[in-house]
Length: 231
Image (cartoon, rainbow, N blue to C red):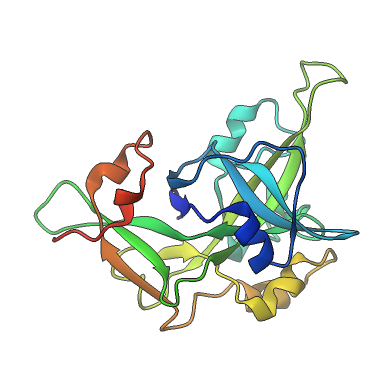
């Protein structure tokens, strides 16, 4: 599962890194070291005129959803069942995206303690993570035809690699630059291709360290959250 992550890199830097254009006319969210579901988040999508860095709501709200609350239950999608679950299957051909993240958090059980230890996970080389995602559009069915469209997304998860396994049995599906175009370019993907792309990160890609339990509070979003602490 991926339930919190860091998004502090400026959008113009992300756009350059992903060879994308920042969508004009939107107010960017403040840098956050504790992004939580329902927050506005950046994602890279492929349009007819190239890649764009756009804002979405974290927590997928399918087009058929009766209300926006559905999104709180759909912050993640399991890679193994993307082509089986109706909510995701229809999105795979043309609604794929990359979710930039500086790192993400996971909570590790500590023997003899009730409180889990939060861990911060990020790339060893310090570059942004490219998390595989799916996106959708939704309009409030009770608000009439002039209601605005809500763009939302979910982050795809896969099995944990050896680095993550002591902390949690799942991790976000992280795509390397060589796979970005294959994931972003609209078009059907068969089960074998999906399975080949959405694999655990290679060994040596990620590193992790314990951080303050302040991250447990969604209202706390400043940079100290990623500082290493003693166990």
